[in-house]
Amino acid sequence: MSKEGIEGAAQKGVGAVKQGLGKIVGSDKLQAEGAADKLAGSAKEAVGKAKDAAHKASK
Image 1 (cartoon, rainbow, N blue to C red):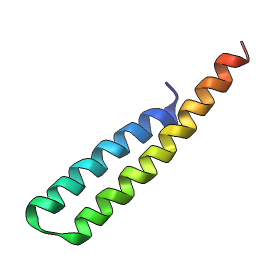
Image 2 (tube, rainbow, N blue to C red; image 1 turned 120 degrees about the vertical axis):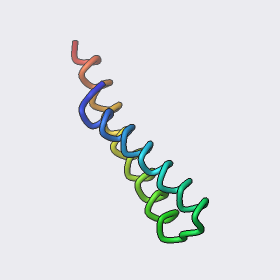
Image 3 (cartoon, helix red, strand yellow; image 1 turned 135 degrees about the horizontal axis):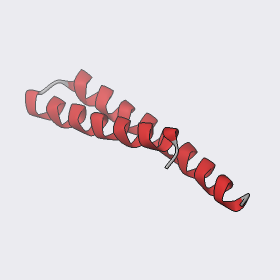
């Protein structure tokens, strides 16, 4: 897996934790930050997967 893919997966995980914690403590701000982190992580992970696919296709 590419660096972007790993970073994206990690960022999605952090976002999920933030979002869940925000729900528990009743913080709309924390929930929104978590959702944004999850979205950004998904995008970064998709870039990583695309790079991996391009690398495999070029072999």
